[in-house]
Length: 155
Ligand code: HEC
Image (cartoon, rainbow, N blue to C red; front, side):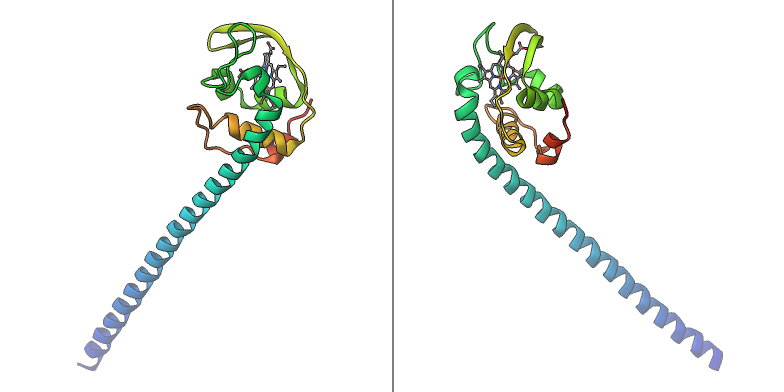
């Protein structure tokens, strides 16, 4: 009889421990999602700030050729708006802004064979202008370009 009582108590104790552990795990899960949402907001803010700076860089250094709407000029200046080159060649795009670009390239099926000189921008300005052109005129690329990514691209 005594032993049975003990076992019963142990059982109840075990059940309580189990319930507490489950609620702790559930709480942790909740906190994780909270943290993830905060991170997303943070990244979104970072991207918006970078794009705002990039817009100024674009107006000062890029607009005269690629135009305010990013459409460029047929056969002369390739478009950035809807450019498959920009989407598919992220590293090359950074490289071209950093060091210049010349020789034949194909953008949206059209060949351009001209030259863009290096514009002497700082790595941060390049990251900002990349974030601007990759998220304007219908372009979207939520994967933010960081200064480190630009720094890592060597000649
Ligand atoms: C003097 C005119 C000129 C200026 C200023 C200029 N570009 Fe370009 N850009 C070109 C030309 C011409 C090409 C194509 C080069 C070739 O044919 O190899 C090009 C190519 C590109 C490309 C790759 C092709 C594409 O359309 O996706 C990107 C990206 C680009 N430019 C971004 C920029 C950014 C950002 C700036 C400003 C920081 C800038 N360019 C300033 C003329 C210019």
